[in-house]
Image (tube, rainbow, N blue to C red; front, side, top):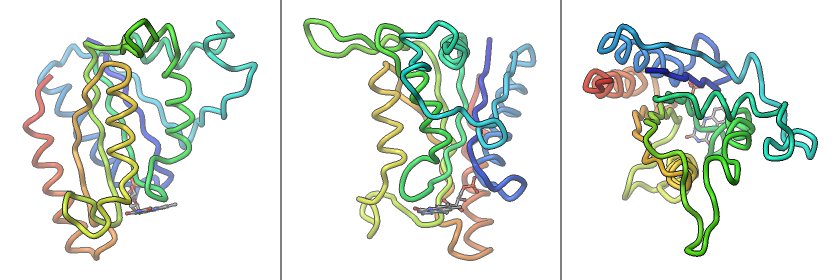
Length: 188
Ligand SMILES: Cc1cc2nc3c(=O)[nH]c(=O)nc-3n(C[C@H](O)[C@H](O)[C@H](O)COP(=O)(O)O)c2cc1C
């Protein structure tokens, strides 16, 4: 079993999403001690923006991120909300893994996901709250976007969410505790 951990927060030690991805990875390692873990820090070691020369479809040397994703059985992704969507660091990585003919394909009946069978667990953190019925629900282009991205390639992602992080220390602590509570229910 191979696990790929992707972090993208720029906030280092203070990052909520990093705290959650660490807890998720610990939980999965506890339920399967033989799991092989590869960790990527997209803030410390960013994936450059795509260029024509680095399009994975056209350049075999630019396939490293794609191959690493394809090889993983479980992908744990830290997704802090920056300006209502994922950090550009994470978007740059997504641009390397959604590749026609590799993770999806177009056929007579339209697009088809080719990456099914993989598990994707996303740790979301946001300053505000975006749940159904809340005032800013329509501003959420993070969970909705990632559901579309992974759904398109054949994966239904699971979410661990800590919202309202900017509402003050008590709400921050309560949101993190609630999210960590859902982590303990995850099994490998
Ligand atoms: C550059 C930046 C942009 C942010 N934009 C939003 C936003 O659009 N909506 C929101 O609810 N919170 C926003 N926040 C708050 C973060 O989502 C919140 O601090 C969250 O905990 C970040 O995850 P992290 O702690 O893992 O970095 C932003 C924070 C930063 C640093």
